[in-house]
Image 1 (cartoon, helix red, strand yellow):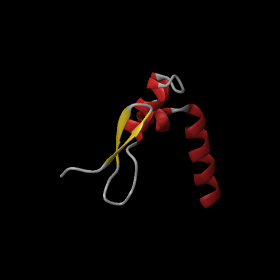
Image 2: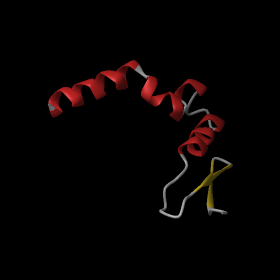
Image 3: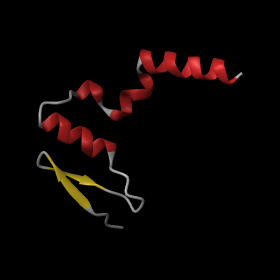
Length: 63
């Protein structure tokens, strides 16, 4: 299935049928414009120590 795209900083960003933008494409656009680094990839988000602490705090509050 082919999804529509938008161009951000010269990079084609895919948009799904629900209007959500592809985070990996947005990250590539940010890197291309010097606004992000490879270490800030979306796939690294849940591996971050800060996010792990945040998730632990949320779980503790939920109990």
